Length: 414
Image 1: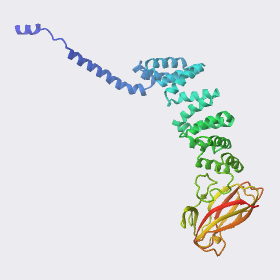
Image 2 (image 1 turned 90 degrees about the vertical axis):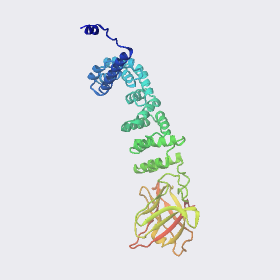
Image 3 (image 1 turned 180 degrees about the vertical axis):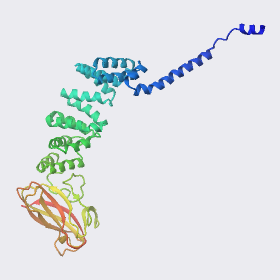
Image 4 (image 1 turned 120 degrees about the vertical axis):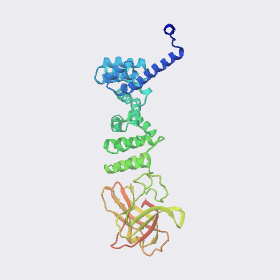
């Protein structure tokens, strides 16, 4: 009994610092675990549940503000976005919601300041930039509006059609003020440049904008490259703008307007089609620009033709004024009879006048010897532009022909 009494009377040990620390760790672990558990709910659960679970969470408050704005409850959205910003001052989406509430309340100057700040904080906040595009455009500030549009379209391919229509409509309605801004954006070669220029080739309105942009960009650091210019020229041909091409070509001097045949020596690759040579290949026809095997420093057109296939071998567009001209070229035959199997032709792009055919070689010329061919032709007044083509003259049986062409010139005949 005594021992029991002594034990019961013994003082109880108070918890030490180590015990308190362990309790603190347990409590901290529980709280951390709770935060880990509720965080996905705050992000993904319905807004009402997220706010109940974490009423002080800036994320939950911001989501609630966005929900209230979408429902048109502007005052609630403004109050919730402000609460979110108090807890997280650099929350761009909360700042954007606050700016949009100011806009919907009619305080557009205040909204402009807030949403400009949101746009500067994040290039990825699409609603802020979209609002700024519209706001600045309504104020006639193309530079700022299109800069925000550029930010949008660099990230979002799905909205490219809308932004492209905006650029084109402005370029058509107010070209003097808007097109220099679009040209500056294109000069930076943004990832959307190719898609935008291609979109311009689809409509008459777009082709006019493209023509103006081609002239503006030509003097800058990023003019139309040959592929872009070729697509533009080809679109003009398809749209019946054959005479417009020569006017634009004259402004750009690409290729130089003084030359009737572009790259007649086959040694200049830096020209856009359809003025540059277009070579065709198919079964029985092989055409290539290659080094002359008799003079490797000289490039020329080599044609390997089976004598049976039918088609165009090479072509380019040219603009000749009405009058009399002479066609000349150098030719060297390896095998076969080029005069019977190939001919150079000049035909009107618009279909007026007769096709002129110039045989490629007189009979009896020694093989593997460069010689000259020549032909005279007339361009009628009804023919604003012409196709210069090398065409086959097929037979009912194969007769292999290999031939070289060089120094192709068309000159007025006095």
